[in-house]
Image: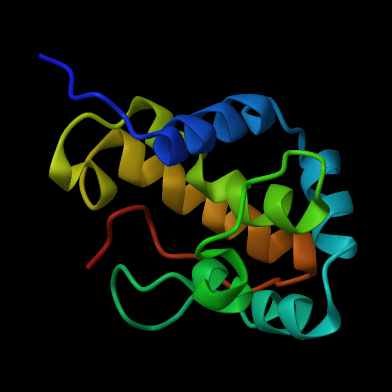
Length: 127
């Protein structure tokens, strides 16, 4: 049984589908178009807390809560890149465990790298 999605959720799914095929070059261009404060946070790399997201922190909830996802807006594209695995998530713990969580982490690291971060990344799902 599939639960019906709200219009807002449907819009988010359409947004993720529209950016799902972003290339590394697309990501670099989107990050480069972001404001300096966002790029500075991204270049700092991952947060030290497990499951804390430096990408979400960089873009700040206030910038996106209540907004309409826009696949043509570089800010939305840069942030949304690490959210694409949600298209395939079906269980509540998919955000934290398994292949989709691993892919989200890899995309998060790619976003930091697109900003210029050169640090060491932990293995996916490492404690």
